[in-house]
Length: 212
Image 1 (tube, rainbow, N blue to C red):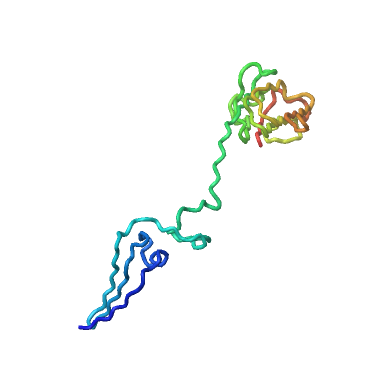
Image 2 (image 1 turned 45 degrees about the horizontal axis):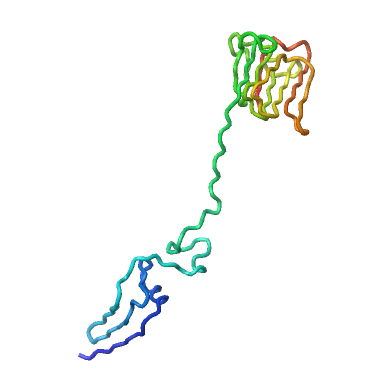
């Protein structure tokens, strides 16, 4: 039986990389001869090696690994283009305490947080037409407190607005009546008080609004 042999010269490492599965890498100079034997009855292809195949990740050329979707055989992973932003820590709510007497004296009428909300004091037993002052405790910047004589929030009657422009650990608002004031630091308003007078608001508060 006659046979024809086609013997190929030893392949370079780069060519062998293209032939071998990406899972494996071949040690340099491990390939001695690639022989393809063609016979009358069958054809066989075998690879004679002087060394042993080794499990190593293949490092591809840089241009091959560039682009939007590089193949998984590229070494390493690119960081995401738009990493998720970390949530901002929740700021604790401050406390607003309304009291029966002026200068933050006597009993507590109602205690609320500085989170936005609306309170019709006619809906709370024993709370309507009672408050004469309030305490600000750890109130956050940007908080606006409005108190009204009207349970519907009408500005045709007495109403007062208190603006908190900076964090206030503690402050007593001794009355809902009086002259309007504004406090500022470096041109920035840190505290404001405005009262729209008709016939008095102390002891007549029926509605509270908190906004930011």
